[in-house]
View (spheres, one colour):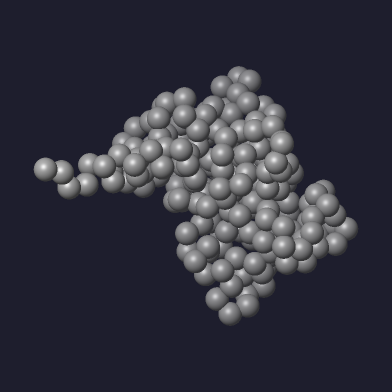
Length: 202
C-alpha cells in the first residue's frame, strides 16, 4: 500500500530482456535504504526489489505489467517516480494507493499558470464513473486532486514542489501515463453494481 507521495526520482541505468520480462536497474538516493523483497512503486507501479547496493536497485516487470502500464516505454536515462510502501503508523499525506495501475492515459495539455501548472489527461471512458471533481487520482504514482472531469478527460492542478520533485515536470504533451483510480470509489461502484444485479426476493 502506498500514498502517492513521491520520495525520490530514479534514473534508469539499464533494461535487460529476460524471456517475456524486463529487468530494470535504477539509480536513486533511496536505493541504499532498500532491501531485497521490498515493494517499491515505480511510476505508480508496485514492483519487487530483486537486488540493491549503495547506489542502485533492480526490479523485474513481467509481461502482464508491461502490457498494462507505460513501463515498457521507459528508456535508459529516463526518470521515474519512486515511493516505498506505507509503514503502519505513518501519516497518510496523499490517499490510499495500491500500486496496481487501472489504465494508461495520455497527457493532452500541459499549461503554466504563473505559479502552478494545469495538466489534462485522456483516459478510457469506461472509468469515468471513478472520477469526481475534488476526488483523488494517481498519475505516474503521484497523488493528485481532480479539478474537472469530462467524458474521457480530466484535469489536475500541480504545485511547484510537486512539479519539481516528480517526473510531472518532465512530462510532455502526447506522452503516456499510468493511472490508478481511488480504491474507495472502485469498491463503492462494485457494491452498487452487485446490489443492482441481485435478484429481488419475494
